[in-house]
Amino acid sequence: MFKRLGLDSGVVSGKELYKIFDFAKKHNFALAAINCIDTNSINAVLEAAKRYNTIVIIQFSFSGSMFFSGNYYSSLTNKIKSAISGSILGAKYVHEIAKYYKLPVVLHTDHCSKEFLPWIDGLLKINKDYYNSYGQSLFSSHMIDISRYDINKNLHICKKYLKKMSNLNINLELELGCTGGEEDILDNTNISHKKLYTTPNDVIYTYRKLIKISKYFNIAASFGNTHGVYKSGNVKLVPKILYNSQKKLGKIISINKPLNFVFHGGSGTPKEIIQECISYGVIKVNLDTDIQWSSWKGIHNYYVKHKNYLKSQLGNPTGLDKPNKKFYDPRVWIRKSQKSIVKHLKYMFKILNCYNLLNKF
Image (tube, rainbow, N blue to C red; front, side, top):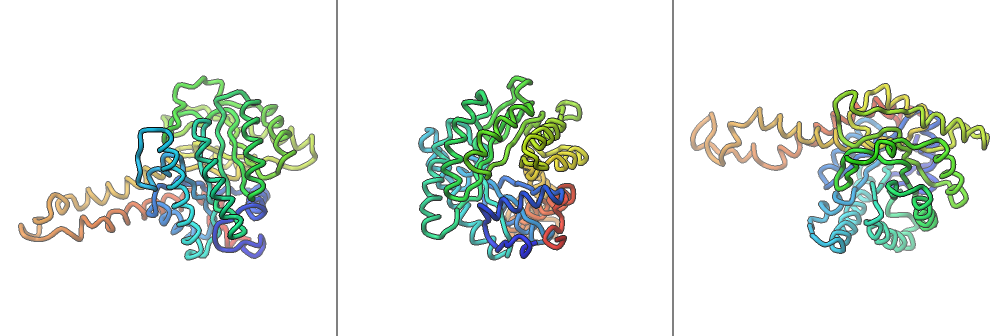
């Protein structure tokens, strides 16, 4: 697949990224997009990609970026500075480590609401300097989430950012309708139920407005999506919204599946629904909650197995003066977290039909 799409190791953007998404629609697979918060989570995701021969999307949220930088502030201005710093540090790390793993990687920032747009402004400024220096973008894509507002205000803002991003070979991801639930600092738990479902007409209207500027955009069209994992029956997904949007627009412009869709809130979704969505043109599925649980599960299982060695620095079942350092060494239990993430990603790659992707084509 590397040779077929003309891909090199490292962070992909612009034409190369568009080729991957177009190829995904043609061959009926989607890429896993995983929110990372530090080098440990990045390494786990890349280990899984390398082991199972696929391409992954590493993405940073606003608060995840703050965590990466190690700075926590109360004022919005300082939070934005911290998020910018963390995103850049994470991006530069991914650029270097992706080459070490000899993999193409997509680098993305997740939900950016209206109040946090200065975060993206700061990143675009750095992106411009990076692009001028190295001839490539620091990031592959950014998400702008103005979905709480009416569609015209949403598109007014997104069009401005698409113009800026397309000049730097950066893809825009925007949301139509809202993703329910709560993720990081995005809280849509009390949002109107109606906002969780967009319409094909809104999708087509959006496409027509944005395609005049650039083809480098993805649409996170809501069809009942909800962040988090919920009891079966509490979330009603209507994937036919995606199908109807593709079919209606396809007839108008005589192109099969012209839209690149993104599935937000993929954690906990039944396999059959995910694969149905992929058949309708979903090329990116966001995974966060299930990855967080996998990370914790790996640590928890390790603790349960070795808890009698983790109560004190000295003293365990083999003797009162026996040291426990090799059990509480962070490299041991963090590694258990990573292995658990890799195991879950193997399962998800198979569902997304991107398992062994680089050897398929």
